[in-house]
Length: 105
Image 1 (cartoon, rainbow, N blue to C red):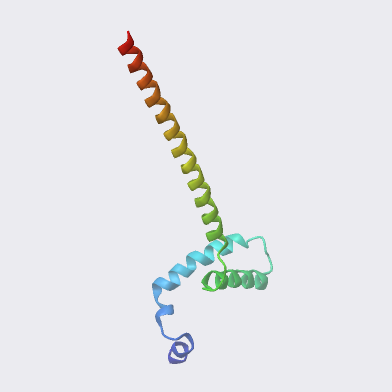
Image 2 (cartoon, rainbow, N blue to C red):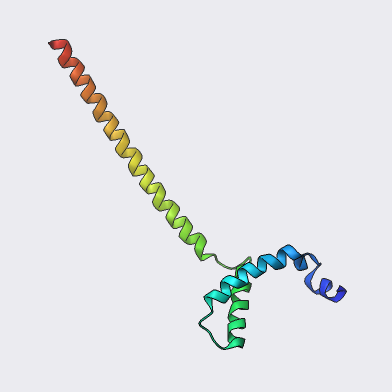
């Protein structure tokens, strides 16, 4: 165990919770690469995908997609707010016009 701890920098990575969490990730990768029938290649692809997820320096494609989606939502929200403000301005103008007509009559 001590050589493993020295190599890994501690035993925390071997904790049951970490191992179970990795099983969830590996199960997703196993499904993703299920069409690869060569066992060695399948394991290599799954290990590479797991390594890419755990690499803190790797670019996160999903983060870019999420940022793009958030900007799209913000633009939509801004358009909705502008439309609501325009409708409210028209409503207030109509109410003022109706009051003016009521006072004239």
